[in-house]
Length: 124
Image (cartoon, rainbow, N blue to C red):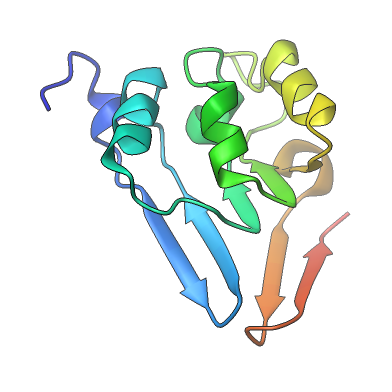
């Protein structure tokens, strides 16, 4: 696939450790989300690094539902110039019952797993 926006070329990786999994999405936007869904790959994960810092350009409900994460991590700077994450994106994750963690509010976020249990530690 050729994309106009270079964000869609971000590497997306699913990391699996035992029964636990993590999906790291970089800055992908809707178009890449659609392509990933169409690929048929298993993208389910306990933890989702939210695409494109929670920008409104990457928020397909069907993508989030396919991942079905317990935790969604928004990697954003405090008072960033882009206004990330966008309120409608945060609201969608909340409506889906997903635990939200944000680097602008929680500081550094660390997940640890032994392949069975999942532990999360936040700086604040």
